[in-house]
Length: 509
Image 1 (spheres, one colour):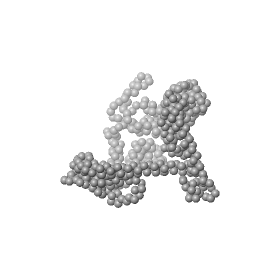
Image 2 (image 1 turned 120 degrees about the horizontal axis):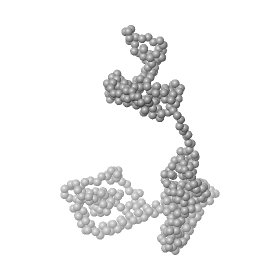
Image 3 (image 1 turned 90 degrees about the horizontal axis):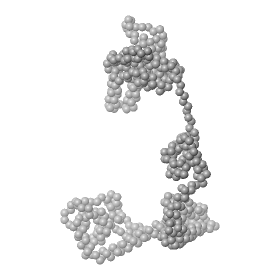
């Protein structure tokens, strides 16, 4: 109705209004403002308007009066010439328009007043019924403002109690407003009356609580003005800060003792344990204010105490691990050096030398070597080897320090040093590219991912694990026996027999 500029619609008139689906669709949420002038009396060429003048609510109502039952949507554009013509027509019929405006404005005001009063009456009835529902048994409930006979909850022999409850609540509310109004009149302060009382804080809504807090603050300010006419505001602020200056009895009895203990603590760990006992009991700002008479407290200390209470428990003493420095066992050092000096961890380089200085002062010139594995991989293999041999190794940090002393460059490029390994690595890369091409061609992605993982495991095994498995004489697996693997099946000059049985198999191979 607002889109077509019809106003003054009261609640009673809305019940007899029917809008067709066409107008609901075109004038409702799907309405879009046209680009040309929509004034009914427009003459001349119809073009798109560049200006921002539109038909407002009042103009749409005036157009409906001037041109009969013509619907002109509010927000439609209007050209400058039509606006001037419309003003001239209004000037010619000024008395009629003003009379009509007066009538419709009166009707609109009456409709708004009716809606406002209906809403207020509905809120009052709902709140009264809610109070009755909370305080009255089910079989004694009565419908608001109805006789016992007409109530669906009425049974014979039960006296109505809802009216008495409402009357008592109304009397209490009126007595309170009367007393506060009398105090406000004495101190010359304007006060708004309390409209409703709070029955239960737990069952009340957030809006109801906020309203009660606001009214309590206003009325307390009125009382403070009555007690201290010249400094009512200062008295009110002093009353609000009483909780900070005088903490609750629990803080007086227990927290004060803990704060004294916190002040006398000698180290930071003990202070954190004491503060963790009541760190979650108060907010950060309250804790800082409580500690001001004793010792200044920072936000970081409060966070540390709360973390201590959350992880270890309030006031708990953390367990301290004792570490003893012991001398390194040289037999374990020799065992590790013997392991890392195995030939499959290093590779000679055909160029470059290194000078090795002895304790006697002599120097020995040695060829450069390249480490084929990383330090962490060598240490992991050594720890696994010690677990198999059931011997206790050195700590990982000590093993890393030994490898730092035993210098060797890490291999980065295989080309020119070990062409066989370089060709093998290139072969794995070629197979991975083939798998990528198959995946682009439409092969299942899960299968391609599994194949790539198996290729990585195979490459890692050939680079690290296979060298450890290969043994000259004691290997019982055909793939691990060097004599069997290097023997030629056809040429007897390149064959060597094994003295042990080759009966085992290796899953990795």
